[in-house]
Length: 276
Image (cartoon, rainbow, N blue to C red):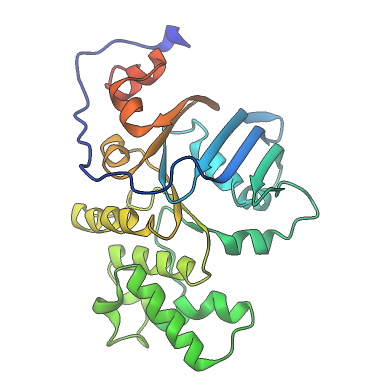
């Protein structure tokens, strides 16, 4: 692997947040053990064992095609939707291996929600987007639905911007607002964990900043896992960082250690920009 590393002079400037880690340390929300993911005969993810800690922001970094999104999708069984994909190993959630055929994946996805790279609001009103999940799970009481919608939009830092147009189409919102709406839609299901697959990659800098501020706020109530290509973003918002390369988990540690004192040469080369 070192053979393809090529030293360069450029360095990546990384700024760390001054915020303190206030969550209880080392409480596992999720854990994988010896996880392998295959697409047909191709081994895309190799023997990944890693804990995800409760009420922390964990960032996955690495070049395109390194396995970070594949790993993220494994955590709530979204890879089940990909034809020819096979996942081996254990995914432990609430002391249960959820990578078993008998597990109800819809219940898993209710508790481990996901927001994708590009905003994907439904062609419905803002209200109906947020209320969609609770309705699908049987909630019919209009008063309860209104409470869920307001609470979710407030947590997604969107309520004040849309409270007077809840019956308007969600497609009329800006890109950043649409992404926060998708986060609100996930929050409406009252999950334990939020999986975010490059949630700001398609957004402008101002919208990206709002998403980052929101993620830091959300960890008070949720465990947040984010895939990002932006190392500065990982440094700003995450408590833990995992570096993936060619399907391998190269290194996983607290974010400050990954960026200032990595144990592996591959990690140092990647975070300093000396990666061939």
